[in-house]
Image (cartoon, rainbow, N blue to C red):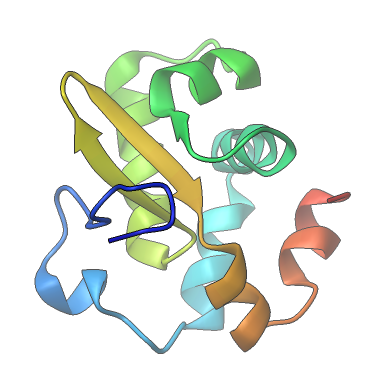
Length: 115
């Protein structure tokens, strides 16, 4: 159980991805290289956690189609930057701050600013 009461698991990833303990810096930086994904991460990074993925996408104001936004969430999930869980009809997402800080201290602050 997670501290917010959600049993965190990735929605569409294989168990090896959901249980990933080793982060690949090239995969993480590649995920953050796209402006749309960076905007999503900045919206998640700057807001309350966890949050409905639709709310974060609205906050980021990307102007992209829903399938494109879903693709961006999948890439961020597979890179290990976020975790997500189904809560009824919602997809709740959270940035993996503790995991990222343990492996790459200061990376999210450097790329996304603040916090």
